[in-house]
Length: 571
Image (cartoon, rainbow, N blue to C red; front, top):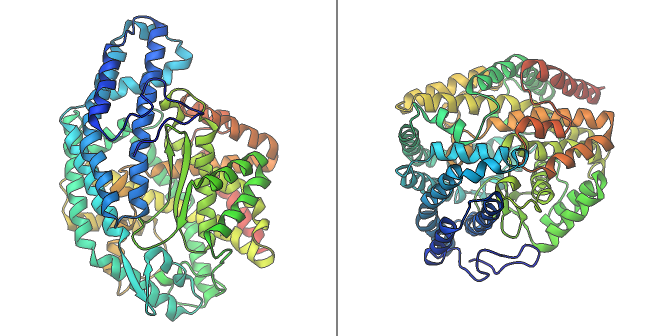
């Protein structure tokens, strides 16, 4: 599946026609890197560039196969190609990368490299050397294969609605219908479909938890949480900081979220509020449907990006022309949305499941922020610096959503504009408690790795009581108990979710800065994106004009700002 070198970023170390899906062609390149002299700083720097090129070529091959598989999970050929890379290529590469890291760490020339340039890289490589264990490679492969099974199960979930076969994302439109009976029927259809595969997903997750605990134990950690904090290079905060963040959210945000729900019930004229009442417009208006086709969605977002910054508009237009987006929901397509970077050709790809709703506009704006991040640092020669921690990567995307807030008039007007803005702000208020729920759940899961299904369910329900809303789930207790299964991060990227909450704190700071001086805030945003991952996390935030802090002291004024805007919309 590998492509020949592109003209902008041609291969110099990897042969132009080398197939990155063929181990016989890959192995000699690792061997060359093991033999290549690295006795001087100049030799070591060139060696790092050659290793980056090989890493980018392999990464792009893996991304291409993953993207193809998620775009059509029921395509056997795509599934086979993806599994071949996961099972036959990646496991063989991991020990080779480890040997290269060990060679780098042992090189005397390493200390002669410019410290300011290589400090973040050096910290990352040293950490990876300490974490690596040969015996974990097959376990990590098993974990990835289990996730592929999870995605296949969820990607093929369909329901029949009025005689038509529909994906679960497509059903979200009907859960927003003003007719309460219609949305209840749609909601029940979706949750009952999910419950049919509850046991299968439970079994997959059980195996994942056991595998992940073994990985942590092999690496010398007492639990997977502590291991994963190191694996995610969370050098600037600890588990205790996340627990404190949960408490701040409980104190500052949960009461606001619950008041919004209580007002929703009064406006709708329902008592009690039920799960199928949470997405509908409180005034019982039909769902905001700003587009019908993915082309129209692209056009709407293109106008917003251009208004924010003409250069962003031009970059997005390039992505559209190049076909770097797959936006429509369809049978066999994996759920959710993501932005992938093709590391050799250095271009982004946006995947999502659009069904014509306002949420889809928000999603494309979000993923567009990730794409602009990838494009901003694409000329960085070191592969590792073309990526950054999610605590900054998500500032790029969530920040873009908020930079777009004042330009939603390009999509809506009048009451619809106020409604779209309200949905966005209420979405922020809703997101914080959900993030705390998912993150706290993961803290518990992996510090109690021998838990039973009953204990897992009890802990989940306890967290919902702590962070959840006021809606009544009577008669649907099984659906509530299995809600966690819809969060794909728990399966696909364990412990990756609190980053969204941390990044939302950064995004809200960016929005506040933009209101004070939009031009400067945007310039700071672009400057920070261009740094990629070349600086420590607090410095990346500082470059964006933000303070890396998610304590109650920082969160309180930001939540007050959102509350004030919501009150203004009421006025």
